[in-house]
Length: 192
Image 1: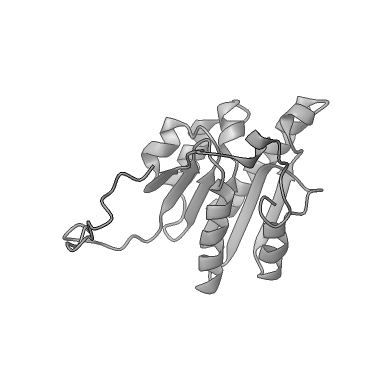
Image 2: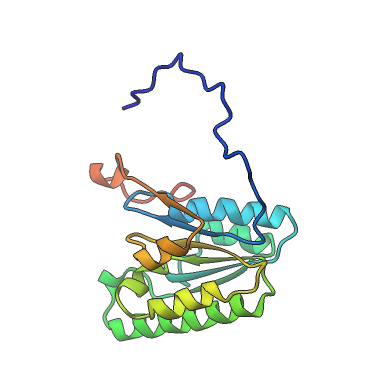
């Protein structure tokens, strides 16, 4: 899997010659692999450690699930909004799921625009955007016109090109192997 020569130790600094500081960044964690939200929570922890006010808005995860990351982030003072209905394939009425996603976007947009938070995570927002429940143009406009100090992390598979284009950093999570493929269900402490 790794074709790199183990004796090829980097000795030259790979960074660009002239680095500047940004007042804020937009990160997108996308792709079919596991770890998009987990990586976002890592950024949340960094922000909290720097004294930032942080918010997480979850667009699909149910408010009845109470994940490990929600528990610890709430203990750290993170504003946590879980607005989803859960897995869409379990839904008995997708109009309810859609309404909750639209409501979550309204709350997220208000959080971003208010500028009270230095970091806002839009967890799994790519799904309702791709399903056209939330207008991608409105999301892009909100991001582009946000207060200068508001950093964003956007997660979810199949990030629309418009979000990739405006992002400062895009990470594509690849799935090499997943426990589900062997019939192993999600595990507390590892997956949620």
